[in-house]
Length: 416
Ligand code: HEM
Image 1 (spheres, rainbow, N blue to C red):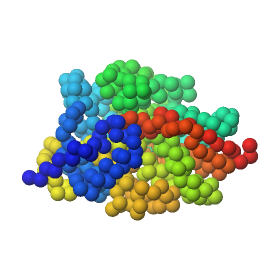
Image 2: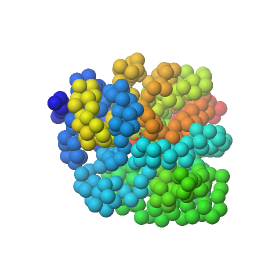
Image 3: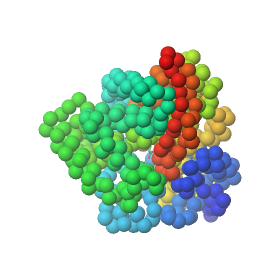
Image 4: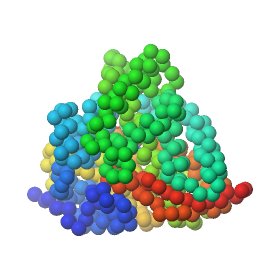
């Protein structure tokens, strides 16, 4: 049986590794070249296969019956896993989202919102995105030439878009921001912490979304919260737990990821002035370029799958029941899939990237995310005469969702 072990000097799984992007990219390159699928057995996690090549990631994520999402979707410390397993029968939280589901069940729950995400919902949302983008450009003007772009723009825009999607008032922004950070970024010691990997926030979250569910059932509005609240699964009304889980997923999945792409995109433009100039001359390049930004940033670092059968992947013999961790940023920097992958190139064909995942679970919100990224940069960049770093960017320390805690920039508007 072939079971190559992850070399000890390579560890893109440690949260701290993501504080040094150049180094982590070098490590992933070495893994792809010498040990593309390797057995990772280090505390504090239960062992798993680390999958680093673009083609292998697609092979795993594209076969949803062979590699299932439940029961192990993301890396969680063994101690936390054991505690929540006892409490929730093998799941991480009391909630169970469409991401945790497989097969027919997954298809039927995904179907409830697919039409909204792929069609009229996003078309209507564009107007709101336009207005919000103009608001944050105005914020930048008022700031007088220097701002923390990560905190004041990149994090704010997606949060407001999520509130609009769910039909929540802007006054709810602090609550949604807090639960998102507690549930997703709990590895970073500086961000608001949750001792139990987010499980301790759940009662509060369940009560909040339970109330939203009851309101939208009693009085449906023109929003996604109402679509979910009043949907049928088969012939039955959606269950309360499933609806609350959906709300939670939409709130968390769409915020930090898009914020990370916007902050990381701005940093990429600052570090690659020739790409900035291209977009300033032709903002339409962002129609494709928004995807290049997501490939470049790859805000989600990993997802997990569990093999249902024995399988051989790039020479490694995977056993039924083994876990696999697909390292999405590694796939997106794979030289076998992209020409000069370490070059940020707004004109490259990037559609095949795995930043939004691949296969049956591929991101439902990608049109929303791309619309936000495209609209912001297409409107903002042509107005700027100059933009540069005004301090050191501070990345989030996480092996799950990346991004920046701080991105201080200095800029001048052309008409200022
Ligand atoms: C740049 C921003 C984003 C990135 C990088 C991203 C990434 C991802 C990835 C990698 C998955 C696949 C997970 C898997 O296969 O197990 C996913 C699924 C999902 N995303 Fe996103 N996402 C982004 C924005 C959004 C937004 C804005 C929303 C909603 C408003 C959203 C909602 C969802 C949902 C509902 C799923 C679950 C789909 C399913 O399980 O069938 N995402 N996303």
